[in-house]
Image (spheres, rainbow, N blue to C red):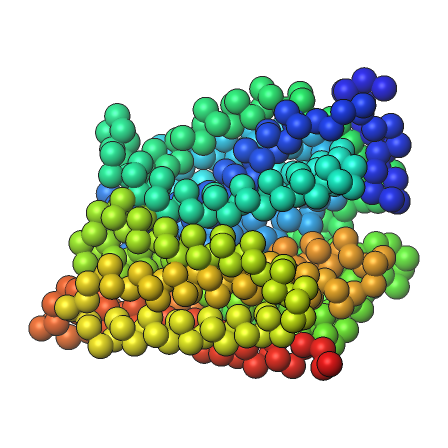
Length: 484
């Protein structure tokens, strides 16, 4: 069988006809794709203040720039994985990378905030086609031992992407290469994407024998429903909650209810649903899903709030602000590597302890900013930032394994897609809610307050949601931990 043919994926997770040697060169291309999709989740935070100045973007538009990528990414992940199974994973990899590269070019050349928002949504849509092929191609084309090594490299790559998104993004904005400024954080994806497309021929093609159709009606209902939920949350406060925003929220509730009924009808008719609602009715999995939404809703919103505080509030340069994120990211990577050993030693209680530490670390960070206000020295937050990052690392990856452990093996694929979607939807929801609190605090601030004092107060107000969400998550995790 030639490298251009489609290997059929067997129930055991391996190709019927495996290539003689593991495709390590193909793995490097897959890792590059995983890197850019996660890089673009984080890099935008340090560039937000520069975008606001050049494009005249208000806070609600900033929320759309961040959350638009996450929402489009999240709601289409399941469909992206199914398309790769049906039509070939390398083929969808190339399509996803080509679309992601083109959308990145539109981001870098955007003349207005509205165009940038649309291009970010496009980035997220094509990232949702791209990233599932990375995971599936590694699973199919590597044997058990090599698969562990390959996934280990993938985990390290994604962690490094989070770090690079902060510090490299800050450097690119501040360096102002060829006068592009913040636009360079998107335009750098163009040569990377073209290189990945050229090298994609080293990724063996594979597909699934189960050529089930994709439930596009379900995809449309849930995508539109979530869009109508988040759009008024981001834009409504800036416009004083006009009638359209309330109508959108009501429409979102109706569409999500229609999605539930449509999925149940599809299941009863013998067709494979996009989301098996029987799975969502399993108590422990449903609570675990809520936990995923809560924890991941605090991540992107935290980075956005901190970027606004450090740059717009206290005048740090993009590189200085990005460098302040690095201790947090390093704490995350180190704790992520240690978390599996801790869970193996003391069980899922390690996750619960991590959740408590997370809530306490956020509390300490908020208290520091609240006490210092306009006299805050951002560098003094570094110990608390390290603790926040380490606590996130102790929770996030082990939490996903815990939640997926609540379902039967036959449901593992669908459950993985649901959890991945909840991660991104939770992140977008967190940005929306924190944006409301942050914006209202700025709007209600005293005219006599200094600029730094005003942004410190807005940071405390916005981060109050993160603190409450982390505290609720800690309580819920203790309820899910098996009793010895």
